[in-house]
Image: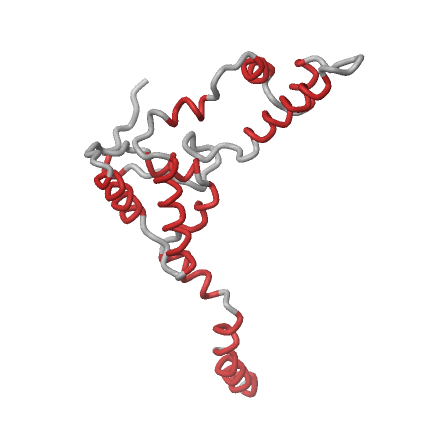
Amino acid sequence: MVRNYIPKALRRVDFDDPNDHFAPLEQDKDTRIQQAYDYWLSTRDQEDPSSLHKVAESHKVAYSTLRDQKNGVILKKEANQAMQKLTPVEEDIIALWVTTLATWGSPPTHLQLVKMAYELLQKRGVYEKLGEQWIARFLARHPELKSKFVNPIEKERILATDPAILLSGLPYDSATVRHYDKAR
């Protein structure tokens, strides 16, 4: 199968596309896994304990995931943390920085986000490159930041729906309507 070649400079990740394979995963998946495991542990001492299969099915979690947690297998999320260039604390610092800038009304661009990440890495003495999909995966790990990144067009659309702005132009419109209404 021949793929259409798209240069790296022209590739874009659509963070809002649910079909995109880099789109953020379900936020509550880890929570459901933990709840299912806790429920299974709590019912283990009862006379008629629930089987691991039934608990997995009722909590909509894969049986193998629950079995692995029972056997002490490390979650993929925790195992991958060791391979990340930024520590969780550094990522939290970046998330706080993004939130602060967003509350000031000026959310950072993706370029500013990457520069901040490199700055934190350099302070630690690490001079490695971040991966191509670092931004997409960072936003997947911090879904609360997804709405903080807006482009200027979205900002203008939001301002266009502001009632104060719409009402400020209303007297001119009603005067124009009256003028042309008399002409009929």
